[in-house]
Image (tube, rainbow, N blue to C red):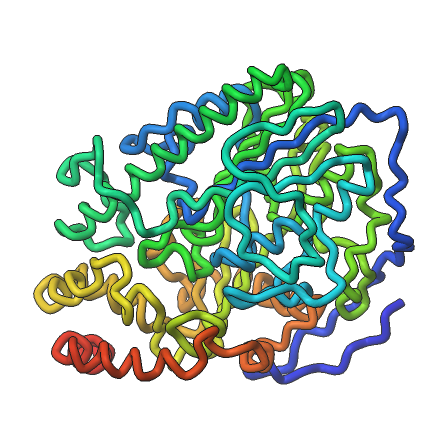
Length: 493
């Protein structure tokens, strides 16, 4: 029995919910206990870069053409409630490859690394006889924690040994090409974006690169068939976090944390199936270890356990869901965000917890304006047009205000409000679920060793320390009228 933890006054301005639970003490010898009777499938993990889950045909998009990804979904299982815990590239990839949440692994900030000694999928599957390759974007560290065999291009490995190939695309990360095949005026603009000409042009370019990514998926599937490995390969496609558009990446909203997740496994997964089981990226490596014949409960991740825990994964295998033996997995999924370590930004922690119906978000430094590439850097070339429209358009003003200034607590009914636009935090009808979700978030933070603001301020500062402040000052001077409006008049309303 874990000793009772003393109440902490670090969260929500009052003592934390005291966690009393019996934690399983599982030996972590580092031996995976592989079964010699297990037929090991090849594993192909295709990872997009900043792709919103709803911008795929198989997830309901009427605008974006993704025939190859849609075909993959028809041939396998599509998850409708899959999540990353952090909507930033580096932390997302490192939790996907390690099975550990960001605070525990150390890879919480963007451009950060896991703590020395942390092990990844490259270790765990190689111990089970796999050659573990990575082609494309890395964005992780240190190299000792991710000893992938490096490859280039879209070719499937040859040879008799089972392989795990991570194809980490750089598409559709912003820096999009010229629009081709998408007319800006005919596109559907999501309700959390300002609908104007600049936004539509950016969407057309973004959609163009999604279709290019889809072409790459088609090339991989063709090569898999040419190598005669299609029937022996488990294929996963996942979209990483949401797009770089405002309110997606760099947030704990579903449009940032929710991810497309499709699995095809010929002969093992029923085609055209669908699951609403709650899964997270930390569940993926434990699942692959079990598929490969290992025992994920006996894996030593190389990380000292969080308070009261052990050295194992933070996630759990969802193999039973893939096999159709279970419809449920997690009861809750979690979110954690920091602006520390970003090129432009400052301390701004965000935490969240979600079940199948509700989302609870905590912004402990809500009195600060939210600053990052998108608004200060005008990275997508839309922000200035939004500021312009906000001065005469009440809807645009509300969208801009939501981005830069947020309340301490946000609460959403995601079944009724999938884009999280109607904050219910002050609605007395939701007092009980708010209380329950708040306690659940506190319990998880304690388990992870996450101390909220204290953890935020202990993170490394900007990777270009000292540069973002003069850059902010320079940008502010160049756009003084707009920023006086946003940070002055607008915020007083």
